[in-house]
Length: 419
Length: 90
Image (cartoon, rainbow over all chains, first blue to last red):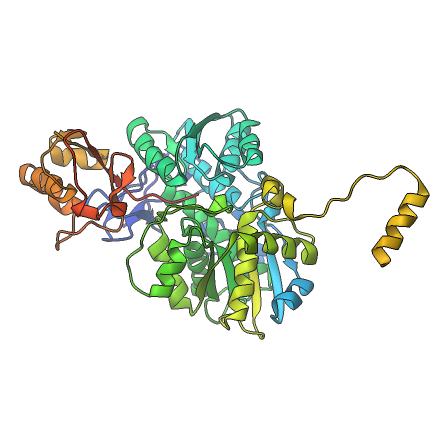
């Protein structure tokens, strides 16, 4: 099979596709479903393509495009050129609190431009939209993806149709609306919105990034794995803990680590992968625990709204890569989510959103259960920014009454603090 | 009579129809009825054991049929079924 060009006249072209279920080839297209078996389509990479070595990659600009040979395009990207390359932050106080030998935070809460890891997938999807000459883009979103698509579309001058559940956090709604998209609030859960967008993409032919551009979109998540490996000095950690909503991130982390191993850029084995969900929406965790192959959908009920996907499309894949890596999965209560957000903030100076609280709290639970050991070097994927979900934590914080602007009042506060 | 909505990828197998009228007292019977009329649709809607595929979701009005017994979910004459290939989250 050859890697066909979608738009030969463009400087950038999208790779052709292949069905992940039946293996049939499919031309490069804004399509996500195999016509033969309805299985998911994924990009096909020529195994004989020329790959860069460590030095070539290290000399490139610090964005996710330094790994462009592992992203689903031929030619150079034209959109979202500054996405990616977030810090990998040493977190010794968090390591001590969790009880592991070393802990690092992959800080996508500081991602450019919209403060979540969704900037990675949107960078890939909007370049696919360029390759296919799509002037309207959109998404079904629990909030972070909405922010990322709206921001990128505004920058690129594209029309954006953003579909979100009606009850999202106000900050996430504002952080989409500010960019001027068509923001459609749907009465229902994320799963209702997702189903609607599948039908919208089918009927209107727009580039819905996580529906008909999904094959290209999802590949952007691999860059978090590439960056972790490079930022660790071209090696892999013992374990990675990541939040799970649709299950795509864990699946793509596995793929990314595997691709760097295959390329000889790192050595060893894929890190043990650990997935984190909230108790109120944990269909993938339950699947990992049961060990079977049937995902049972749930009705979400959690403050971790960015993870509230009751029917995760990549849930079976996520459970499979978690188990095959030797990892595990854990869910945590909403109270523990808040504790996790605060623990992360108080030990690292990083304010993560509710999904971050899920990840930190799940890591703590995994240490307690012995799934993570005291010898482990652990990377936590912090995927979104706490400024978007302040409502979740504000009631748990002690915010003192105001004082008069007098030195004596400060002295009084110091005395109270010392006692 | 209940109706069933098909995604574009399946309409060539149903003479170009996006929406079909169907019959049956359960989702499984409705799927069986259109499979009889359009045999090429059958293997796209259910596996060789007659069970739903994990990567194809069927909705009864606005609800995933897995919350109502899957293919055993009862169907009323005014109900609308939708076949939606699974899509990623976000």
